[in-house]
Every structure is written in C-alpha cells, then in structure tokens.
Image 1: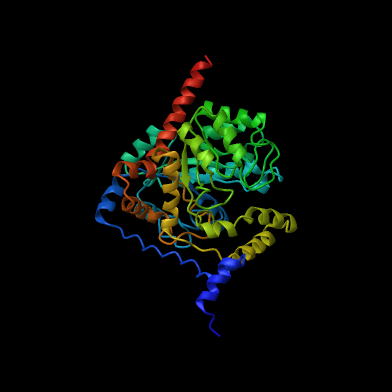
Image 2: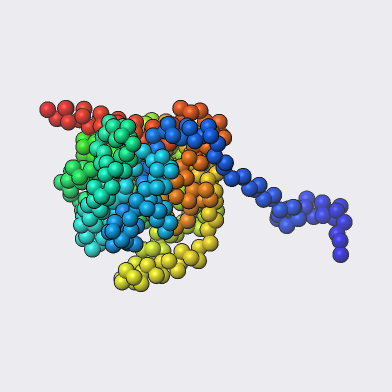
Length: 416
C-alpha cells in the first residue's frame, strides 16, 4: 500500500523521531579516484629529502626472521614485508627512524632494556651488513651528508619509555648508541607517564617523567608523544625546551582514536615548533575504522593476562583482529590528516611516520615503502607548493632534529 505524500508530510511534522524513518538515507560518500603519478610529481619527489618517523622492520625481522639477514635478505624483494631495499630506493627514502621496540609486557618481565638493546644491535647490524645502502646518522648534518652520498641515513627511535627501566643512565646509554627519539610510553601506563590506551595514574607526567624530558632535551634526543595520554602530551610540551615529535600519530578530529592528537594539543605543537608525523594504519586514519579499533590495546592486555604463553596470546589476538572487519581506506584518508594538521598547526608542523611493518592493514595505494611518491602527487593535487611538499615529506622532521641539537648545545653550555 502506498501512503500519500501529504500524509507523510504530516507525520514528519507531528510525530517526534519520524524524520529519520521517513527521510531518504544520507547519500553515500563518493569514492575518490586513485592517485595517478605524474612526471612533475616524480621530479619533485626526487628532490625531496624523505624522512619517515617510524618503521618497524627491526621487529618484523626479529619475529619473522629470527633477527637474521641471512634468513631474510632485504637487499632482495621481500613481498611479505612492507620494507626492503629495492622499495626504499623506489620510495626515495632519504632518512629513516628505525624503531627499537620492547613490547609493553617486557616491563613486567624486567626484560625491557634487554629487548631494546637487542633491537638496537639488530639495526646497527643491518647498517653494517648493507653499507652501500645504509649509514648511521647522529645529527641533522649527518643526514644531509649521508644523503648526498646516495645512501639512506639511519636513526633509531626507542618505542616506549619502559625501555629505560626508570634509569636516566640507560637513557644516556641509548643516546650513545644512536637513539635520537624516545616515545614516552607504549600501550601501557608506566611508573612515570600515562599512556593513551591505559588507565591514567599520574595525570600526565610524574616529577621523574619531567626529569626524563629535561634530560632528553639536554642530550638532544627528541621527545616523542605518540602513544601517550593527552595530559602527558601537554606536560611534555610544557616541560620541553626543544621541539617535540609524534613519530607515528594522526589527527583525532579526523579519526577519533586515542592514538591520535587532538586539536588543542596541535595548537600547542605549533607554539613548540614540533612535528606530528602522520601514521598510515587504517585503524587510526579511517574514521569508521578508528571507532572499531578503540579497544585494540585493551583487548591485547586482557588476552596477555589470559594467555601467558606468547604463542597462545598471538593466536587469540590474531583471531580477534580477524574479526574486526575494518575498512582499509585510501591514500586520501592519510592526506586528509595532513591537511587537518596543516590547518590547525601549520605546514611547518607535519610530517610522515608510516608505521610500516608494524601494522596489519594499510590504505589503498600506501602498500609499502615504495609508495611515498604518491603522497607527493596527492599533495600537489591539493594545491601544496613544491616548498611545502618538501617540508612535509621530511624537511620539518630534519628541522626539529636540528633545533633539538641546538637546545642541547645551549643547555650543556649553561651547565658550565
């Protein structure tokens, strides 16, 4: 039976809640076309110093290859990974922060420092094994010098403040081994800093946490606010005299996940001259996927408690993840985050921090380390100038490192 339109109109006006039932559904978002690489973008990308803030190849090598480059030779294509040397060349990567990651549960096991040192060793062995491709860098000038030789400058980021086991001395040792940033927490709140994905205990940084930030400033080690709570972000920005980074986080206003940075913090980052390096994980950058992944760290902790054996935990967590049918999204979703950060914090405060080889789902056209030229292309498509593209692709990250070095020099000079 067809209801006359006049009756429908009366129903809409008189019956509360009837609008949603009678109105036409909201139109579906029109799919955005794939990005097509042009010669102009290729030429520009070749002139960019591409700096990626976070790559988990070292952890992938540990878990899938027994930390052996004999078992998995990255000089050849490794399709099961996101990263290998041929694709790093294709992506024109100029400098890479390799993640030295000790899982959060190593804190309870009192093995965090051991895991961290083993991962640092793996990175340094990789550089030594492939000297025609890689060279360790300690400063911004090193990065430029190494890139001029056609090599990829390698820097280390420690992912999680539990790695220092509450020891400032360990922090200094890590710096001496090439660590140039430390993420203040990972998924769990630690003794001196609150995580974004765990219950808060300190309301941000504890007094010792503030001491850690000051010592990082004195060393010239970048303070990384990825993974931390909003209160910890704000405390770090208040205490730090040097630019901070978020090595692999995105914009919370675009995709509402605790791993992303809210607008009020982005405004503080602008004042600090820091850099938010946009993460590529679909679960953090695609709005609908971010909603589905809000409990990922909570579920992980619960399963670790339920299944003490690591193999059992990995099996059950993989089973849970398979049940989360998240949308992959596209390269456009990632560049939406760049756009938003530029709008709120400015073009000097955004970079890229892919999280390649540390994530399970990536947006279409951002499949691996060879795909960075497509970001350059999409930035040009959206009206960014050549100079702005160069800043986003790596110039901002290098500038933050250089300014952190200058702050460290001043602080050490003031010590007499």
